[in-house]
Length: 350
Image (cartoon, rainbow, N blue to C red; front, side, top):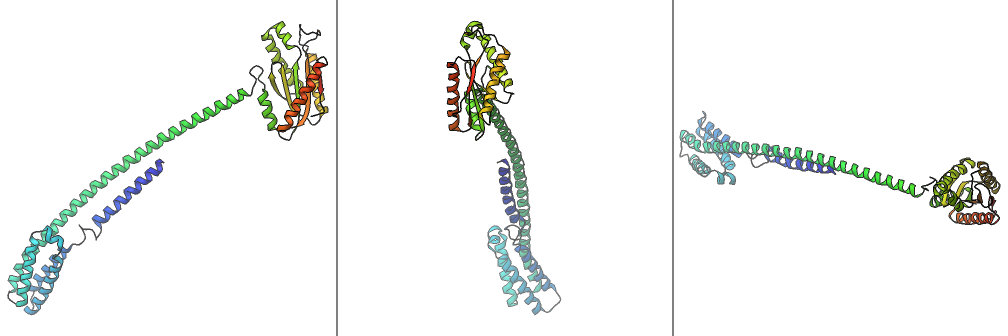
């Protein structure tokens, strides 16, 4: 915008300067063109030369009449008659001299003398026009200087405004980037479980949609008798157990699974799984890995350490298949719980 404004200003100044130059310095302007007074004066001086030349009177008078008529025609213009008082008198003198020359009622010397007054008038007109030209040129120079100052200061102002707009634009970009980053970070936090750092239910749904048409395995896990664990050890110790189990599950699944905490003591794992046999192997590893870790659970009804109930299903990722796979995995999970917990089951229905 600043560059466009500057170009408009330059074009305007150029369109102003060119007509002014044409008016003051071309041969068609009202001040410097139409120098009729000079040409008229030259013709009158030529007439005087013809009268004073050594030639027959008839030839001298004929040549003089022609020069005076030419001078008269060039002098008899509206601008001269209106602006210069001596012009009317000079035209009358020229009329009288022409009549006397044609009638041969005036001699050469008197005719020469009569022409001095018109010549002086025309000389005054020339000097006046030169003064007008000088004044016009001075006015033009002053106007040009003022326009140059306007152009210079306006260009500087436009440049500064351009810098200001650029700075404002950059600041807005930085603010937008900062807001976008904050929004992104907020979205990332919104997709994470603050306690364990793994994904939440929303993240699980989003990740499934991001793996369209891939063969996936979904594992749902519940900590058995977690309420009793909290009652025995307290919630801080329960939170620590959740974090420890998160690490253990990830390691047991060879860090190939994406983990999610669905709420309370409920977890989910999402991983590439070509068939149910592979998924069964993963579920078995989870149960055995936890038994080897041997986390104590003083309030476990079966006098065991911390145990898990695990349900799984395989599916090809899509919006409609995920909900069915989740429902199927949840169903077999509760079948494990109903059978006494501390076990796993993979459905073939999904």
